[in-house]
Amino acid sequence: MKFVDEARINVIAGDGGNGALGFRREKYIPRGGPDGGDGGNGGSVYLQATQSLNTLADFRHQRTYMAQRGENGRGQNCSGAGGKDCIVDVPVGTVAKDRSTGQIIADLRHEGQQVEVAKGGWHGLGNARFKSSTNQAPRKTTDGTRGERRELQLELRVLADVGLLGLPNAGKSTLIRQLSSARPKVADYPFTTLHPNLGVVSIEPHRSFVMADIPGLIEGAAEGHGLGVRFLKHLSRTRLLMHLIDVMPVDQSDPATGAVAIVNELKKHSEVLYQKERWLVLNKTDLLASDVQENHCTAIVEALAWTGPVYRISAVTGEGTRELAADIMIRLERLREQDQEQAALELTKRQNAVSNSIGNA
Image (cartoon, rainbow, N blue to C red; front, side, top):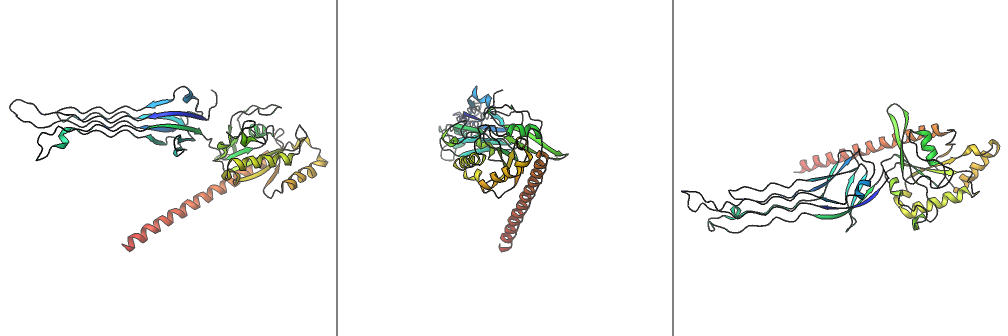
């Protein structure tokens, strides 16, 4: 199935049922009074995350999703049945935005997570509701309200711990093939990767992380050149970015100049993404003679004025890749520990705040 990471859909919640106008008519019971029942509530539309989908391609064929309308009320104080909800399955990692306002109304990150995106209409009231001591035979009813209607923009953002960033043909697909069982297309020409690929990198039992191979960027991507920046949203949830640099580009271009261009495109696209922790990975070192490798790699690092972690690898031969994966795992575990410590600290603060409010009361 073709990978699709964007789609537009219309969601229409059910209208509420109308209230009924009725009067009790039975033998030997004159003037039985009003008995019109309420209508039923309209069904709502929900998005539900599921692991069984990994693309938004299905939404290219069906664009409108409707919940059921609530039934009208009936006599003898019978209320109408509520409308059936509409559950729309989407891949885990889907973000839904209201196209008219741009507001994010759903961010589905976990299996089974469900978010209401269009609320059903409220039921109308039957005339039995309006009976009073001064109005024994009301003829007033109300209609159900309309259900919400929205046009949604769905975006799929892959859930990965590590994202690979770099020029086309930098070796990102080769690296993910080397470290995981994923088999993205690899060839000796640019733009062989046309959609994100995910691979699970297993260090040892119960220690693993997910790596994302993102289509390469070129200078001017923010203006739409090449594949543009449409896939950079897939890096928004990663913890670490690996910036791969081809130390011996086929076109004999300067590796440092190309790396700077990529960083500039990253910054144009998103300041948040630009501020993410990045590691420098010098790839294809097997193409360099051993006596010139040290000076060549050092020159690239100095030209970039790089102060963060630097790794030298060959994704083809596997040299240095396992050491890189092991260090990534250690860093990710430390980041997860920090998240847990921060969550525990915030929980303690909330508990203390509650305790203080109770004590003051």
